[in-house]
Length: 228
Image (cartoon, rainbow, N blue to C red; front, side):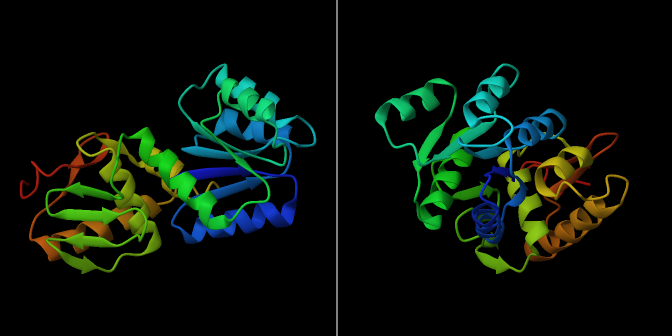
């Protein structure tokens, strides 16, 4: 899952990004509202952590302009504004959640998990496909009940495929949602990670869970497991 943190206090922004990165997300940072809006026009994110008091463009304006063209991307507001009217205004403008400053990083991570799961109507922290189980909280992957060792990138790809299981996913979509924005779009990095992940799943479960879809990309499908 790919997140954007928009916060003008650079130390706080970088601390949030580092914490979420350790939780398994790919995270980009920006420090003013105008830059955030420009980035949102050219890149796709699963969730935005948005401060309201920003230079260049206020966070509320960023949110309102985002919602003119994008009703799906989750937005979590961070703000020192604690009045009920401020919270109501943020939620009415299209935010999905509102967290007051100061806050604990653990609570922020929990709210991010809740919002990303809510997007896919996922009530449990576990994502399941056939014999595969992935816990979005602990980042632990199991095949037929046995833990398998995956790299952070492989975990991100597996999580995204599980969230969209049964649907073909292109390399470009994986690049947008799983890898950092500075990754080379012309490299073979996605295919390399997919190849390694497929091998580990196959060796652990004896089945081919990730199917290559000609001309599109890849699909994770329990019903297709074992088929060539």
